[in-house]
Length: 328
Image (tube, rainbow, N blue to C red; front, side):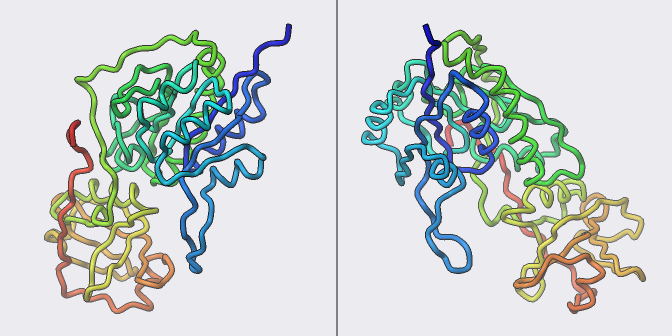
């Protein structure tokens, strides 16, 4: 008698999940990606043309049925039932699923979350881990329950955060770390044979959705804290400072001891065209800078084409906490 083929529906909207989808499509004879639920086409690029996200494009390329509602509802739930789905797998979908979706598949609904739960539940675990100065993070496979990221843990895979990692680098690491996690567990969860461990609620922390103001820098903070935020938000929203109302974006930076006794926000440029900015503890040394409409340049090249007001003290802007309460 041939072994059962488990029909899997994938719910996600971000390219971080592409390696997992490729593995599921080709790596298991008893698992078939039979449906995809993702977010609708968005306008992007200079022409602002409607374009599918990476997950929908993957589904189209592989001729897999795909729905892309603005908000998943009863019709999408019924559609998944029509596909005779056995298991739901979610990663970076962008929606909190209603209870009706959690009951669609006999084997259950599972999520790949980009942190070591219960730490950093919520919308921005990768960037928040860097900005908080963490040295270790990872990805957790968990069963989905009505409460956000609070379900029992099936397994996890750790990922080291190096001092050179930025948000994009760490996203790539997390993406690759999903593969051994899925390889170890997909068959057992499909068969309903996986062990599950409840999360310790006393250790739970929550990270919020990012906004443009998270690119602010408060020079009263330590240089190490500022470097971590610059790394975390290098892709978006980008950290920087303002000169004459224009944001100068910092692509990367180092922290040094304050040998020049600079005050917070005070600027110094040395003979090698290096910029030093005083902070609450140490000196911030930008290595890559970008003005509005320009390219990201090394500091020395940036200074050749930009008049830097060395007699100014840079304004500190509020840096809001990236963590939030459980009920917010």
